[in-house]
Image 1 (spheres, chains in turn red, green):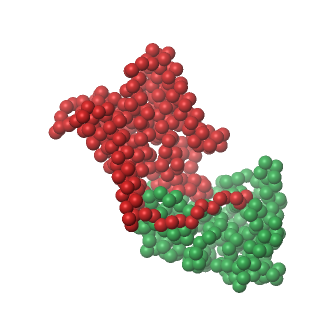
Image 2 (spheres, one colour):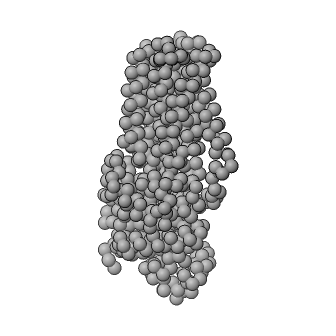
Image 3 (cartoon, one colour):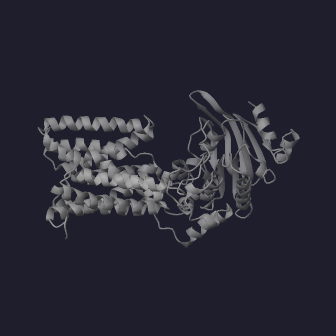
Length: 282
Length: 249
């Protein structure tokens, strides 16, 4: 491969990054429209507790993070559906609870030091070949699930109540989406780290949906933006010795800003719409 | 009356001890076009949610298409337009994608749509006057056009029963006319039953079979001409109904 991907570690980083860059926005597209953009962040913090628990129990942290992230995602969905608290408050509880539990467990494992930094901000340049294959497997699982359930998830995004009336298994599909978020978070953890994990799910979607003509187009475009962010971010990190996870996310943020600016160009604005009615009816 | 498609029998419901519905009873027969009206807070939306199986009544029972509302099989038979203002401003979806989402109920939700599904979606779009705009982004449409997209979404499964909760509040006259055409088409061509919750019945005044007036209880249930005898004209003086409903508070 040509520079900057001429070295084996860069090639492995590229493969891992491409899988994550392409698949994370597929899930993010649904979260953004459900106004749950920060869900990936919340689950990322829960995954941190899983990683720390893995270190304490001497289990491979990716597996422990996956188990804890899935359990956390199901917990968030259950609390949201039970109406115990509003969606953002539920996220906040898991967000802070996860990071606090992670800090405590990392301390008990004797790992509350600089070795935590790669978990928080990613360590894509140290990805191994076996990890790449695991990422490819998880990425394909995400793609297959979106291909099968994407239309139904879109119907729920449009109107959860109407989807329920139409007989779609709304509860099960919401749980499925939560599990997909958890899998994606763990997938992206090695690439950009727990603190930036949601960025790869959300920023490419923001960039793409600003210019996309359809939901399908927005998803494909978001995957493309994710892939471009990974390639450009890795190249920049190699060229200027930058942190790769942060570089990838900064490219995604720059692409989002460009798309937003393009939308503000004359003739691209959306027509005004009537104000939203307040539901006062019983 | 023909075979009942919708049955409410002594339905009562309260939110935190505050009664919203008090022994409400009525039936809607197959192929009927019925308007459900009442002042704000009269329990219309709660009643609709009970009829759809989204809420359990505290007392009494509801029946939809011959079954308990929560356990209706083949739920594609129900088309529902919820009380929802407009689609999200930032929704990156085409008109066709939104309407096709209403077709998912017709069959297994995971299957790939076929030609028959695409034809049904196009048919629904044609009947709300949006056939030419199927590739347009929904966020580029006016409020009235977006409402018609949601109605087309409900029609896409070719339902036997169409329930619409305040679908045309605040939309322009052209959209109201096309809305009326779509409903009369559903009733006459597809023999669908329509239950319409709305304060604005002027557009459909000549097509309604019955008007049910609700204010916790059923205050009136009869044809529009009987309502006219009470001094309420739906078509000639559309403002009569809102004034009359206001007086019911």
